[in-house]
Length: 371
Ligand code: GLU
Image (cartoon, helix red, strand yellow):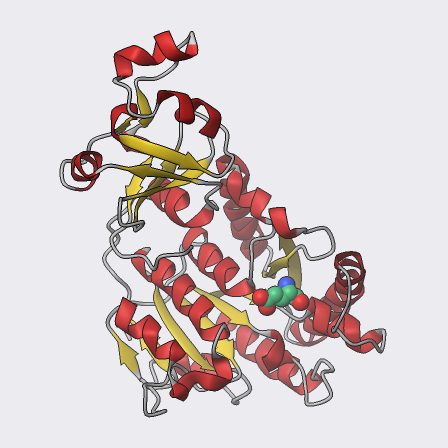
């Protein structure tokens, strides 16, 4: 643990931590978490809580099971559960002189950079009021297209825009295990080898859950944030982590190599499609930090519009970059392989020479291939 004085911590709590064996919200867990959060606030360490459990709480209250529920049923269940969850947090926050401030987000809040930056102002003002921000996905309105995805990803994004010193991910396992099932206490970085541990036996219980955590941590740690994965039901787990005790799996903060706007492009936006580029264009982008021109493009896949974020893929189908495109997939299909001075002839107009300007392009160093 770094020795600098901590100012802000993001704590993410999963549904499995918050519920008991009968899948009901466990008051004892909420009390334990809320008291630790308040203890940190007393120490002038600001805490942002990213809490799951809206659907879990709703299912319990409505005496329903999740299996087979339609989207609109889950949305309704979440709207019942979310305020129950907030009531419980408030019950324990109030006892210590604090109050919760609820923020419910969808991917659309991240797509618009101004809206995205506004969330930070809300957080700062909540702290001025001694209120504790409690964040969740807005499950009662979110559909597949506008979903952030999961709360692991959401907590990584929150940790970045909240400028947190530590991201604590509380889950139902002790941390990341190696192939023999032994807990890994410390990692310098999330590499492909580390991610492959999630497919081994040691992590069986948490497979799926662990990979989304590692993806989120990879992004958060590249924003200079230390991350810890730990078992969430343990007494004082958050306080122990903040106090530097050797708990769970700790992942070092990386040096911030990307500026905030480029991190927003790389991590906060969800790619709407892909373009495949040739070897010459790959070299120009990766080695010479040039913009992407139409001449090096082989094809576009997926339907996207100008202004959307897209992945740039090499001939081996590896993602080499992500960026904001100046041209739609339809336009790119017409101008691929052409020199920039031929764009106007082909389209009848030309707004930009570059398909992706280098200011809007982020080189992805190491990325798992997704089909
Ligand atoms: N937002 C969901 C809920 O509160 C949980 C999603 C997740 O844990 O990834 O029920």
